[in-house]
Image (cartoon, rainbow, N blue to C red; front, side):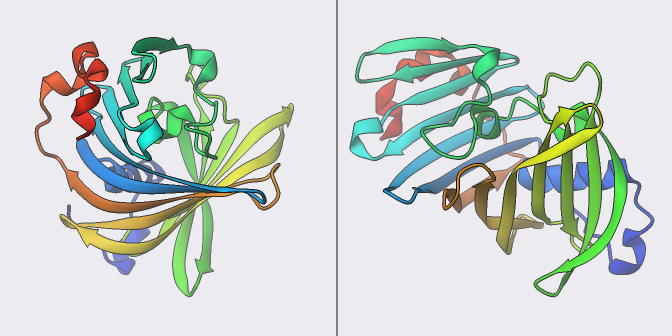
Amino acid sequence: MTLATTASAGEWTAEELVRRAEDILRGSTAEMTATMTVKTPRWTRELKFHSWDDKSGDRSFVRILSPRKDRGTGFLRQGLHLWTYLPRVERVMRIPASMMLQPWMGSDFTNDDLVRESSFVEDYVPKRLGEMELDGVPLVGLELVPHEDAPVVWGRVEMWIERERFAPRLFIYFEEADAGEFAKVRTLRFDKVRMVQGRPLPHFWEMIPEDKPDHRTTIVVETMRFDEPLDDGLFTHENLRRAEGAR
């Protein structure tokens, strides 16, 4: 991935900037291991997972590695269809589209965030918002409004990316409370940007909901590989039921 300089950043269209930012997080394929920590005023919970994202094939797979009570739980998406496997009851269940915004594993991330059904590139129309600085880093802002027929619920998204490297730093999600009026629902903050296969990849992600004071969920990326072939056998119901795949 070739990175633009500050001088040339202004030459990119809003569509190109969104595409570059999404490619930093996804690529054509992405394989990741990460640790998620869910914090509330009363308790803290940690889990580790392994995920595979095949954007070009419109499919994804997530396997929980720990804690022990959740180990082997899996999530399979094929197009618009999502299933989960619960090893404790040895059962595969279909997750309907109406539940894509439900909390994923009790976190502040949603099912859609982790299995990546929606796409900023495909589902939204972007335009520039201007520029600002965050922790001394110049950022470029983009406003994303969904296409009328897009299968998304966010009425508006603000994306703030680094002006020089295009690394994502802030995603702010809004719902349309009334016609033309938007309320902020949550903020996804990115930090600890390190190079991975030529990409300035944020290794720390923090989701902060607006309606839950002192709640937040962080994801720390441990390993990430991009643009490598993924075995078709990963994205099958047979693999979903194979809880030993977590080992």
